[in-house]
Length: 266
DNA sequence: TCTGCATGAAAAA
DNA sequence: TTTTCCTGCAGAG
Image (cartoon, rainbow, N blue to C red; front, side):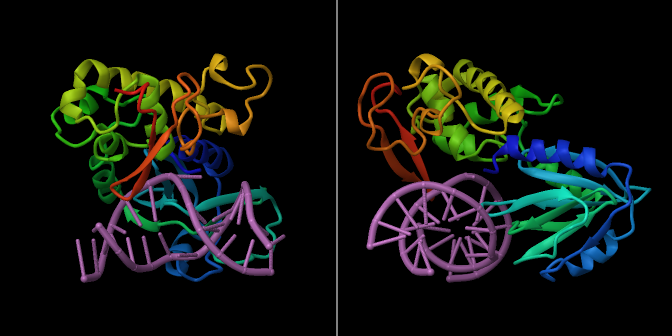
């Protein structure tokens, strides 16, 4: 589930596997053949996530970078060497003596320059998972907008790394009606959304899954969190709200499904 | 085995 | 606003 926490986990793991090592690269599917040839035989430098983007420094001078964005379908797989024969549409395969990594279905897999990397980052809002994030940039931008807060939370120029699951859950936890404008929500509540995003996404980074419910609100408060207990509203339309038992609603907003409780959020 | 739906975002219209 | 990328999963049969 590629929201920001997934990509930060990828960056952390791939950094551990690749940084300082020479890699062999190929593109069994063929769509990234030229890029793979340029990576092949080079040393990988730092691996970094920003929002839903991952950047890999390539070569000793690190003047070019591999840029990956998984989009909706993209996924990574990895395992200990030797790499298995590629099956299906493997866009890019990176191998060290110890490990292999496969990339499939990504929206973006490209070699870029450092200025191009900086331009991508410059388009993004602050990322709650980065230490260098500036929360005020989010509060200022969202607080000046007439767009619905639900749209702003998914807008990567406003906030980087939040996707459809986190946005629905953040708004429920804050008790905010999703169609209210950013301007109407106001600076205080926006700052609260940021703080909660940091908390939830750090937990996601740690555990690899999105769990937003407090134990008291779960059907099974003890033991491991069951998948059906992990969320308040996301994909729970038609089910009763965990707190007020009102039916959770769903509406399509800007092409994406939005879920909320009409009573708990106002 | 088949069908529909899903975490995202850029390009096209 | 619609289409595209074309994977993985859940549920139906």
